[in-house]
Length: 114
Length: 111
Image 1 (tube, rainbow over the protein chains, first blue to last red):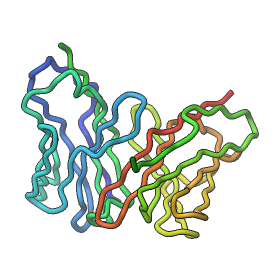
Image 2: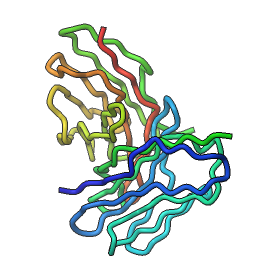
Image 3: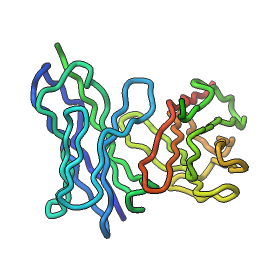
Image 4: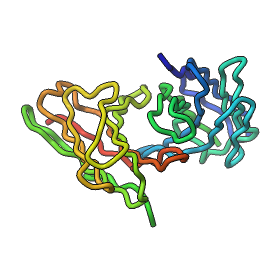
């Protein structure tokens, strides 16, 4: 069945460091891919998405490119801030771009130190 | 402002008791979802509904029940049959061709 695997956390970085959180997936067909962010005690917020191969999603300085050849959707940011400290979830939807029936990775906790 | 409201924020259940978690949305979304989140794990789908008066089981539906009598409401009941109910429960909704929006969650604990 479809699945998502993320790099394990927690990830601890200093402010202004470069961030990469790896995400790979297994899916039949052509899923849409998403990154969600969860701040402490809150629900999830959509960070970015990509709906087809080679699409690049971007938002708030974060980027991720849909790589079908490597079945990956790695999250990157060039310079992290303390306010980026949160848990990041990679997810895929096997229902097309509607976002229905999401399958999540286990989440990666990011801690950014001043 | 439009959004998803989950209540209560914290809930405690006694042994053998059923409890109901509320989820209301004013986004006019057709689809609604319930997820369970355990520490260090991703979200797992409990139930989802794509239209009023219809819903489907997700991956971990045992011990839970739902109803969808109104478009804006999708309550989740955690029954006494759910032996390990302690978790963070998240409700979400979506409109066709758009990703899911999430509420702020309900944290359920056992007394």
